[in-house]
Image 1 (cartoon, rainbow, N blue to C red):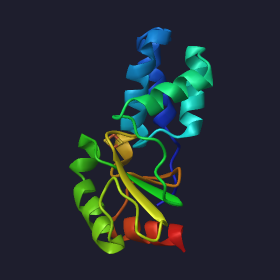
Image 2: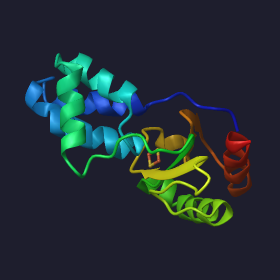
Image 3: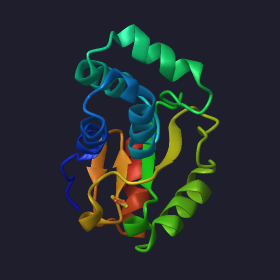
Image 4: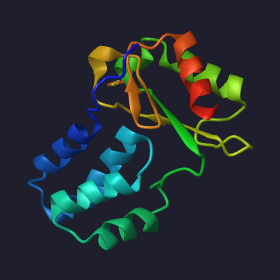
Length: 157
Ligand code: FES
């Protein structure tokens, strides 16, 4: 399957818009960002800072202060499997479990060789293309089980 466009930033923007881009929207926005991306990476934090007109240091500070926020995992590569409803009913759970099995890693963790971190997201915003996983920021939709494993394998080679 071809990579698809990345709707994740749109999802985060929707939350900020709903809250009128008010600075007090920061925590809720970071929650949405984490649910959408699976974790919070610098690019996402910068995006939020810019949109809410907050200094990056403030956004970074909040993201690191609360234990429920997760910064970029330590693996060299990341795979984020969308587990939102639309993806879930199209086999996302099996995809996630097979990746866990094949690469000997639990979701939320990194392989012992440090090559791959596996995460899940709640909805990456492209439900019509379910099931979807994000391989190092490359979103791939209509994933088959076989392809989901192949993409992950290619990532770490
Ligand atoms: S549930 Fe997976 S993209 Fe929306």
